[in-house]
Image 1 (cartoon, rainbow, N blue to C red):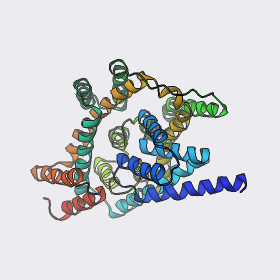
Image 2 (cartoon, rainbow, N blue to C red; image 1 turned 45 degrees about the horizontal axis):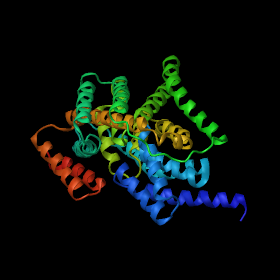
Image 3 (cartoon, helix red, strand yellow; image 1 turned 180 degrees about the vertical axis):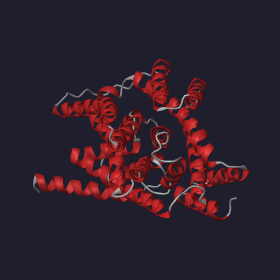
Image 4 (cartoon, helix red, strand yellow; image 1 turned 45 degrees about the vertical axis):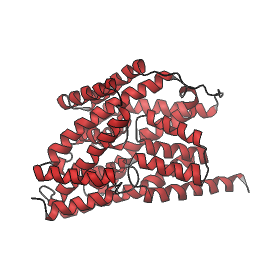
Length: 398
């Protein structure tokens, strides 16, 4: 077999594996990591247990959607940079198309204000986010100092809403965590630097340069597409802790500007729970809604590219250097503190806008609580709960 045919075969194998996962991976980022382990450690044996655990640890330390970054790294390990891009595209495509089509369907249905099924979707967001807060708090805030950090961040995020406050909280808690929770890292064998590290460093530089330059360009350019790209890129750059945390960041960027209303925003977020693949494809729905006719889908593609681009740059840039960082205790401590801040940000988002927009009375509280039970206790698929609450909102709830 020639080198060219071997590369093509590897790319085809990557495409087939991740497209199937993109069509079947329901349940959010934690479930995704379980699917990946079953597929690539146990069944296909692309990586061993230690390598997979190291890859997951890296992606959890980076801002961005952790499961999508694991996809990028696994694809890179199997077939280089082309494999990383193919894996990311195939894993993301099914849910991205579904969310863009949902945006078209919602636009065709007319105004969403007051629609019963839209209210049901908002209630599904209450149940899903509340459960995410509970699980993340139990895992990421197991002791009093981290609980205190989370409560303080939640209060700050409610009193001082905005991306700058959220970023400052994550940085401050990361610094505190590096002092409080630094551990002795496990030594790893050293590896020499090579040409691939230069490309990786360029990706990290590009990530930082875009994060600084895009807001300036958006202010000077007075262009809606450029401003959209800046908002989605910044949201994708600042998310720690999983896809649910993108909710407050995106709302802060989009709703106050009048680009989209809270009703349509939360309706799309509820619908995103019913599709497989990464939750970040919610951006495809938002971009399609914001861009509007004609060619609304181009806005969806722009938003998707912008929100995933920082994740790709960070994963591609950090993965080759991971052997230099994974044995450092300060990095693990900083992650512990940053994760506590993430819990606080998500608590604030649960209060506003999820509960303030979704809960209208005691019956809504009861419906959201009842929906959380099958999710938590019986591992019910989220799409089923979303559909049931949409029907409940349309035909039963007052």
